[in-house]
Each structure stands twice: as C-alpha cells, then as structure tokens.
Amino acid sequence: MAKTKVPLLRPTVPSSSEILPYLQKIDAAAVYTNFGPLNESLIERINAEQKVKFSRDVHSVTTSSGTLALELLISSLNLKPGSRILLPALTFIATASAILRCGHIPVVADVDPHSWLLTTNSIDHAINLKKIGAVIPVTTFGMPIDIGAWSSWQKETGIPVIIDAAGAFGGQSISKNISAIFSLHATKSFSTGEGGLIMTEHADLAKNLKKMSNFGIGAKASAQGTNAKLSEYHAAVGHASLNNFNAIAQKRRDLFDSYRKHIQENFGDALNFQENTGVFAPSIFNVRFKNQTQRARAEKELAADLIETRHWYQPLIQHHPDLSGIETPVSTPHAVELEKTVLGLPFFLGMTKQDHERIIQCLHRSIGSAIEK
Image 1 (tube, rainbow, N blue to C red):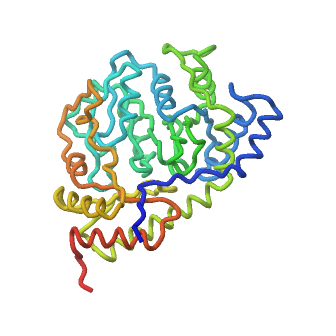
Image 2: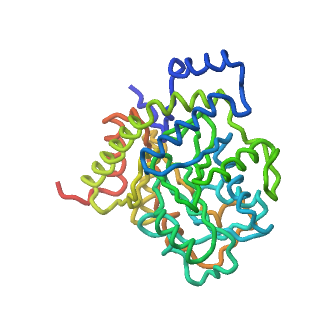
Image 3: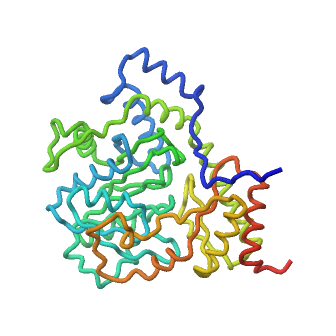
C-alpha cells in the first residue's frame, strides 16, 4: 500500500457542532460585526483567562488579524515618521511589514543562540540606541520572552517595548508598560479561524485601540485608523476554541515533550532544540542540525518519504526578497547560523506513532545515530 503524506501542520479548530450554539446566538441577536455581543463576551473570557494564569488585570482588543493588531499597537506609540524600530532577524515577515506599513524603519538585531529570541542581552552594544524609537521582541515559535528583563530594560533606556507574541497565547505575560499582540490564525492553538488580539494593562489605551480598529472614529491618535474589527462569526469560533483551549494546550505540550525525548533518545546532541522558556501551547516543532549539509540531506530523505518540512522564518528579515528598507547595523551571526541549520518537522495533534517512526528513520538514514544501541 502506498504511503500517505505526513503534513507539516494540521490545524485544530472547533467542529461545526461546537460552533453551532454560538452561530445560533448570532441569528438571535441579528448582530454580525461592529463589536457585537459575542465579540465583547469573548474579550471578557480572554481577560479572565489571562488573570487566572498571571494574576494581573488586562484589557483586550480583538482584531481581524494579528498583523493589523501589531500595526495598531505600533501606531499607538505615536513615534515620529521614519522612526527606527528594533526587531529580531529571526521572525515572520509580518513583524517587519507592520513596521514598514506604519511608516517606520525595521532595524535588525541578532538573537540569543540558545533561546533564538531577541533578548536584552542579545542586542549588540554597537547598535546606537539613541537612534532607536522602539523595540519589538518576538516570541519566536511560541517561546515567551522574559517580561521582567524587558520591563527593566525599558525603564533604563526609556525606549518603548511592545511584544509580538503571535504564537504565545496563554504563555506570554505582559506588564504595566509593555503590551502585546497575539495571532488567532487557524494554525494557532487558540484560534478564531482568522484574527488577532491586543492585550494591555491600560484601560484607556484599549479603548483608544478599539476606536482605531473602527476607522479611528473618536480615537485620540496622530495616525489614521483602519477597519480591523473581528466579525461575530469569527468570535463564535473563538468561543468554541476557548472552551477546550487548556486541554488542547496540555495535549500539545505532551506531544512536544515526547517528540523531543524521542529524538534525543535516538540522536543525543547530534540534533538540538530551541531552549524552552515556558512554551504553553506549542504549534511548531523545530530541530537544529550540526550544519547546513546535514540539514539538506535530512530534507531530501524526508521529502522522499512524503514527509513535509519547512524553513520557518527563513530567509532572515534582512535577506527576505519581499522586503526592502531594512537596516542591519551589525552582523547577526547567531541568526545566520540558525538560518542554515534549523528545520521545521511535522507537528499536529493526531500524529501517530507510525508518523514519528517514519520521521526518526529518515533522520537515521540522513545523519546516522549518535547513540550506541
């Protein structure tokens, strides 16, 4: 019998039967968008969820995408046009494109070689911080950033910080002066199908951002607003998704941990991983090879066995062919090395033992085993 393809991702979204009760509420209310009752109650539930996890009150604003959430939050900083905003070299294109669309300049910095994150310590001292208007650390592959370290850094430098926490819902905390955005895309562990979220501890900021998402009507901001509202249909998906979020997050962590353990048992330190800073609901699984040649051999073996892989967040922002106007004031050796050696493997709920074994066997054929049996 022919082998079946092992996909890279398989989104875990609520079934139609789970969403139906919320769709019926839409019918009853006859409100379909413009901050309808489902959207408002979803925000209340999200805020309560964050309060339970981190014991801090938050105020949230839903948006139609994570990218628009980031654009709105950048705009709320009221920076001078053409300001330079620091971001990690290893991130999704949306982080840089949001900066550009807000009329600013992305400035690339290196990442920590272990966590693969932009940290307060990974910023090269050669970067002139006096020319930096803001910083956007990213929760790369869902790994939370150290909010305490960034809060201290922001206080010391006076440079505003906002977090692109696209894949870290449930795991990333915020602070009094640092807000964050999250993606609610279908591939994320908590999803509205398509959507985004801004989370802040400032009620007035949340109110203003909400107005900014409705064309800027009534907003107090120098930037123009946009139409970034989340529809009631997407909110319905969000409610159904949130009902099972913690249980699904636990399943994702269990799969993530067992996957890592399985690879380590077979390959020791021949393959390694991103340092776990407290991932809550992982949706991406990467391994790092010793060199680019080894990765290429593995890719070939996996592709021949119909196993899908991906170079996540590659090329780096400064190398991306679809971006221009990027500044790279210093070298980024750690990010460049990750660009050559990191490979995304299939990761989704419902992966079977056979799927894992096929992946392990392909890795054995490409790099051998580092552990004596």
